[in-house]
Amino acid sequence: VQLQASGGGLVQAGGTLRLSCAASGRTFSRYHMGWFRQAPGKEREFVAAIKYSGDQSYYADSVKGRFTISRDDAKNTVYLQMNSLKAEDTAVYYCAADRAFSDGRPPISDGPYDYWGQGTQVTVSS
Image (cartoon, rainbow, N blue to C red; front, side, top):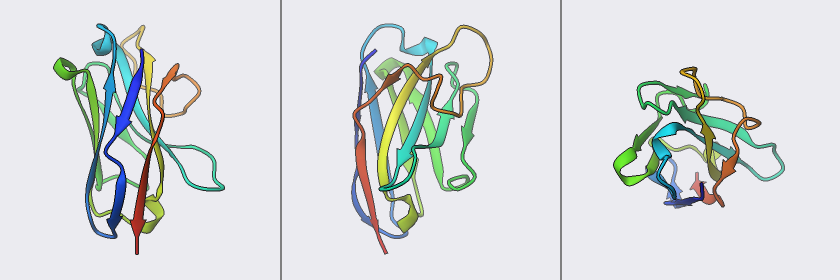
């Protein structure tokens, strides 16, 4: 699976952005998908994840209520809608894929994810 993230940019605090992550391959629907971010000088952190089936999603407390993860299996794409952006959301955002072999929840740590996109920069000015 190859992942290509896009949609980052510069936005003012309170603004919105939608990130996209396009996946190659024919088995996208069998993968849990996640978004992570890494700010300068900080470790990569979990942002959001969606189950392979699309019926469950999970969020970091810092983005809950502001960000929404979704997927369109017909387009092999996962999205991250980001509203009410804050300066502390500034980071490089990465999408990741984890093959689902059971009906469990998607991982909320980066270890289990096998495939990663190249990252897209999000900068929020205050």
